[in-house]
Image 1 (cartoon, rainbow, N blue to C red):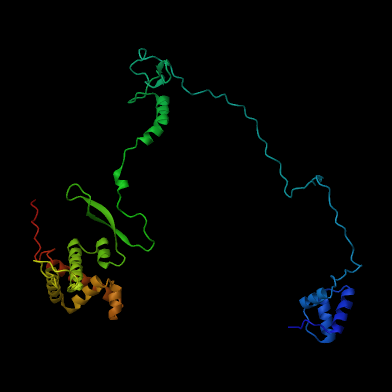
Image 2 (cartoon, one colour):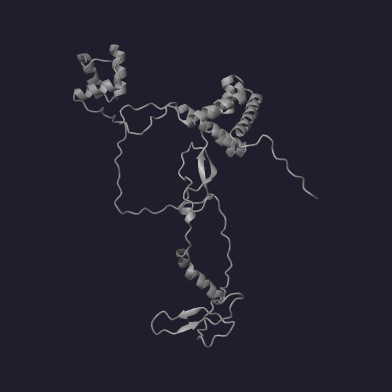
Length: 349
């Protein structure tokens, strides 16, 4: 970076070159070649400004061109432009105008007494006080009380009224299915009991999340039946009850006469642990570990295989078949299926 204080001989050379009409780029190159310096164009320009020197004077050899301004509002004549391609415009033949007749049907304005059996009943007038009420009177359409034109007028006139008198649809108002879902949501439709039903057994369609629920995803895709699904849900409920553990006794609560101390382990938790122990014995070590990974940890078959170091498609299919067998056993344990299916009676021919 060059210093701000120039040498006197450098400043004199700058003044001399600037008076000679050289540009600042040329001046910087001339000073650098003469005094072995490294001044840039911007450094030369800044030094000239500090010295009070103006811009370099243009050479007199260059012609001085004065700008010519046209007067405001002066219109220049348009120069004719010749097209590159020339073709003759197509010749159009003059066509005679067609005499169209009016096809609108005027009503006959018949009174009620003058109407015949097959006349149009479309009314006219009668809106203002003292105005006579007349009818169209033209032949009506088959199966209708009006003619073609009157039927069109009636539909056009009654269209806003029919829209206002549209019947109320309560299913749209009380739709319990969510319409605003996040982008990463994974849901499936399911029929559940209506909590606001007036009669028992009524069902409504709702959406359930299957994002972290492998059991719900298999059931929504019809890969397992209802008994297998209910058996898996019962196992998950028992696991949640058993995970709660014993309840601690609160010593700060006041003692009530006749009251009993809260049991550290409830009867429901004890039964849930017994059912889980039975399920673990009947499923075996391998089946119990597979059911625990899928129903408790929410792992997919690919994740189960990755956890065991078995990444091939054949092992994934094996885990899926083994998991369905475990669900069948859980359905038997919880009473959602029978050990011996009822044989179907042959049809008599």
